[in-house]
Image 1: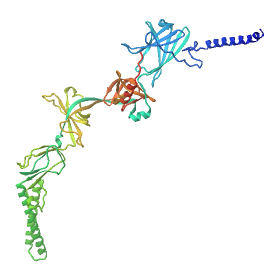
Image 2 (image 1 turned 60 degrees about the vertical axis):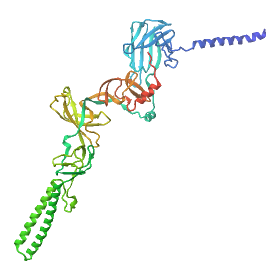
Image 3 (image 1 turned 120 degrees about the vertical axis):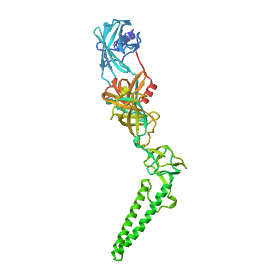
Length: 500
């Protein structure tokens, strides 16, 4: 009995301790979502949300029997939040609680979304734009109690560091204003500048002894294109050589008579006769030389007899040989062209202008010319527009002059001509090469720190280089331009959720 009396108080203390501990644990067991008064934990922060799937297929947030189911409804209408209320799993009328949501996105200000009763749900007052990638702070008030939940959702987002961007060659640009050049596209054809075409016509009749070039070849000014044997040239060369010899003899006689007259040995009239003969010989020699020069032949006093008939036809300009009508051994007259050479340092673009576009096309207009067969581009201006419309084609023709120093443009090439019809400055534009198709959106990939996220765009005018943005991204934001398809490929591999 003594032992029992001694241990009884100890046992009572132990039992009381166990009961108190159980009560404390029960009282301090945390609410899954909120604090009853302000929806915050002991540190004053919103508790982590418990997310389940609700009866409507949305995210269900619950606390002490009160539930809020959040859905995004977008069937046939722009996406909007719908909220359904529950008490112990049973639906509540939408007016039973007040709900608001703070929605934050990368690179955008916070949206405050308020809700109003609509049928059996609460309807948000703002459109939830794509992508549905955001952080939510949900606040509900019911019977004087405040409930708070948090929710994060990621979609169409990819993490990529600066080193990775440099490795794959992605170029980063900043959204801003740009000048959009409105253009008119018309067909055209490259033609030879007729002012640069030269007909090569030998100035002497004769027989063709050599042909050194063919049509399609390039030639430099002064190159010997053909050699002709001409009897007329032989006669002219002989006259020149004879005149040269007579001139030399007359000069000798003149100098001798002049010396004799000065020494009082001969009469003055002998000196004057020698001077006259020398002058006549010089005139005859100059005349014979000019006849040769007029034929394009350089007078050569020491020319061998075998070369008297050799007439070299030289290229008058550097350019492309368009045609050749001479053959070895052919006999021709002195008025027949044997080559056609064109200076190809610049060419013309003959642009087909339809009657409906005549009011748009004007001289001085900037033009971009692109070959349809391969990658060749050039720029010029409209220098001329015909005032007549062709009887068969019912079109006019405009002329654009293109520089062609490296011979990229060839006569007969079909081209596409873009004429700048207007220049418009827009406040928000992105590079055309940055535009990608992702899912069923037209997007650019906005950059926010180390993250890229798809930004669906509503686009306006474009000139092929810049695209006006009407909605979807704002000036000052960064985006991927060059090689942006690499980001799209990685985003496709990574995949992304799309909650409703």
